[in-house]
Length: 292
Image 1 (spheres, rainbow, N blue to C red):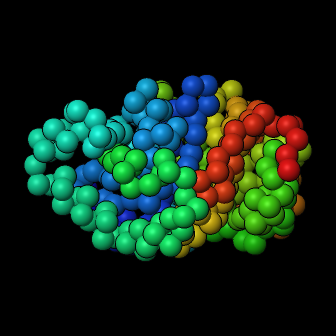
Image 2: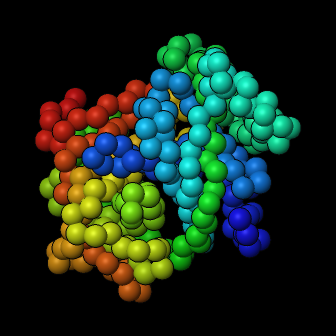
């Protein structure tokens, strides 16, 4: 995997990225701390996490890392290394010292998150304690740099199906991350977004890859992460289907005050369900369900 200096510096510096996986009928996007070692990207999660089930069912995945001036999407196949399984330690040993060095690199890079876990250990569910964690490795087969996207301050919106205590902090989030599938492989891009009822209106700029087909399953992630405390992570992932929409430009202009610069595609995500989380509490509900 060839990388220019800016992309490599971003991947070395950033601690949080967005992982996209195929999930039955609709994709799922969640934030994850990571480490890039060689051409593989490492993460950890609970062995009980839904992303472990999804990765074993369909290993195709994408990972988005971004800052104000640059976004990078990595695509490949996701592997699960479970130290409590029979094959896990054997597979790790067969990988040689590079795998162990990558795990050590993850630990050093994400030391603040590890400290945050220790700080909040009493309130963390047992399935997320260290003895119940597995390593996820994304074997990167493709990398793409996306065009920079300037997003001005945005008016507050009310996310459907999300408790107010989570929705309020997310209501002014400028950018979302849109996931859709091309040939069965998840695609990711940062996008401006607005809401009309429970539907999301988005704009995909040129240069992010093949645009979605009409009716393709998709997901829009809106989140707020804490620099080192996983218990204070907040997020919501609207999941449904995409279609072209002529109302999207007006809705986006109303929220941001101006339309994004450049060419692109305006789409509506018809929301069917929402997955939201607050720390380690995760719920998936149909859009329109009553929330607390």
